[in-house]
Amino acid sequence: MASFLEKLINNATNSMSEGIKKRVEDGTFNRMASDFGRDISSLGAGMVSIVNMAENAFGKLKGKVTDAKTKFEEHAERRQAEKEEREREYAEERARRLAALEQKRDEGQSNGDVTDNSYVPGVTPVDDYFVRVAKLFELNDDEIKLYGLARLTVKTSLFFANCDGDYTKRERECVEDFKDMIAAEMVLYEVEDENGETIEFNSDVIFDNIEQAYTIDDIIRSTHRLVDDMSEDDRRNAIDSIDYLVSDIVKADKRNDTRTEDFYDLWRQEFGLI
Image (cartoon, rainbow, N blue to C red; front, side, top):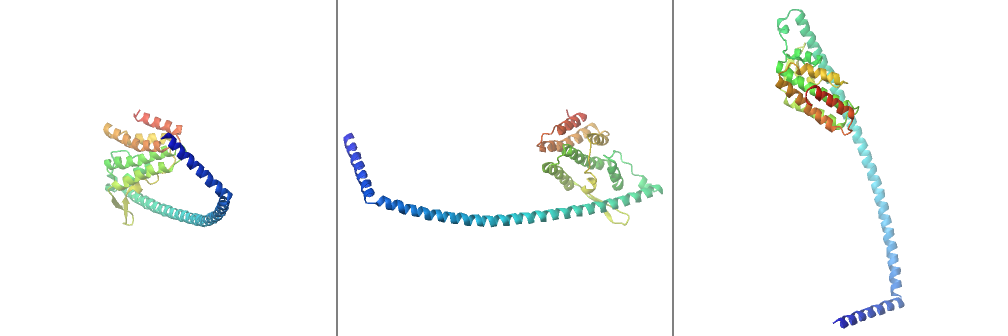
C-alpha cells in the first residue's frame, strides 16, 4: 500500500512539473501574468475613482451635517434664551405681585385688621423669604415643615453641587428632578392679589430666589432653624430626607474633590449622621 501511494504521488508530482514546465515554455504564464497585471491596474483605477467619489460625497455630507448641527445648536440656544427670558419675566411679575400682596397685608395689620394679625405659625420657616411666603399664603405648620423642607433640601443640594466650583450637568439633573417631583406632588391653591387676581401657590413660589451662593454656615444655620423645633422623629426624617438627595449630589461629582467630602462630613456630623 505504501509503495502504491508513493508511486501515485510521484506520478502526480511529475505530471504537475511537466504541466508547469510546458506552460512556462509556451508563454501561458507570461500572458496570464500580463492580463492579471492589467486587471489589477484597471481594478486599482476603479477603486481610486470610487474612493475619490466617496470622499467627495462624504465631504459634502459632512458639510451638510456640520451646517445642520450648527443651525440646530443656534436654534437650541435661541429657544433656551427665550425660555430663560420668559422665566425671568414670569419670576419678576410673580415677585411684584407677591410684594404688593405683602404690602397690602402689612397695611391691614397696621390698621388693626384682626384677620391679618391672627396668623401665627407654630413652626419657624427655613429662611426670611419663606417667612413672607408662609404669611402671604397662611401656611399651616405641616405645610411649613413640608415645603420648607423641600426648599431647604434644594438649598443644601445647591451648596454641595457648587462648593467645588463646578456645577455639573449630572448634579443639576439631580436638583431639577427633585424640584419636578415636588411640583408633581403639590396640592395647589391660590390667593388674591391687590387687583383681585389670583396668585397660585406652587413650586415656583417655594423655590424662588434660591439659586444663590451659600456657605456651609448658611446651610447649617438654615437646617437648625427648621428642624430644631421638630419632634425627634420628625427631625430625623427631615435630616434623612435632605441627606438622600445630597448623597446623590456627592456621588454625581466625579472629580473626587476633597472640599465636597469635607463639607459633607461636617454637615453629617453636625446632624448626627456620623
